[in-house]
Length: 299
Image (tube, rainbow, N blue to C red):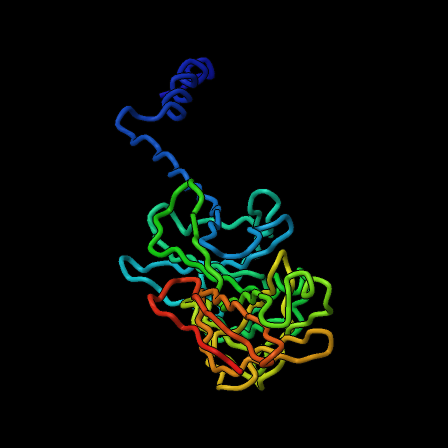
């Protein structure tokens, strides 16, 4: 059969429509699955008697985040955690050096936070030292190590609240006038206070807050503030000796005592200076009351 040019032109539009329009039975293309947007991790460290001051502008903390595997928690490691030692800086809110996100919308995580931020080599034995000379406010604050955690946290757009506590021990020394002194004469005297035989170096487990004293004993100079002296001390047991030396116008008054400084506790020493016996009377009340009278008399 002979096909003319006119016949070809007549059927061409139908052929084109058939090829481009597709069959009514052809499957519709599958729409692309939208990628899940990961939620940003935000933190809000809360203090529970953490420092004397509270957090201040410019303070920096370090954060580790460890993911769960199903319902099983992970272990904090030096590296390889979901988040490794991310630095957050306080400027009214906590801002990370880089934005960090949850693994997904379902995976729970444990959060471990510490202050002050440092180049941590080992999370189970982080090296930390209190200042031997804490007579300045800056040195005192730099001696305050805080650790906190929030466990089994579900992903959320809300801030993760992490309670932090200081893991060092605090000593507060109050001086009172005894025989041969008056409050007025003490106020005019040249006074210095030393805490003797305490180790200033330690290792700290960031996951547990456990502190281990290291190194040799040293002499610690406290900060005078308001009407007492204070210092942060590595938790430890000090054997009986000249624990506290108070020098008044060149005359030394030594407290002979052994003592156990406990982590997270503040220990109050009221020292009564007595010229006639060159003795010191001491009453100690722990920050967290233990229900006992730990006081005594030292000559």
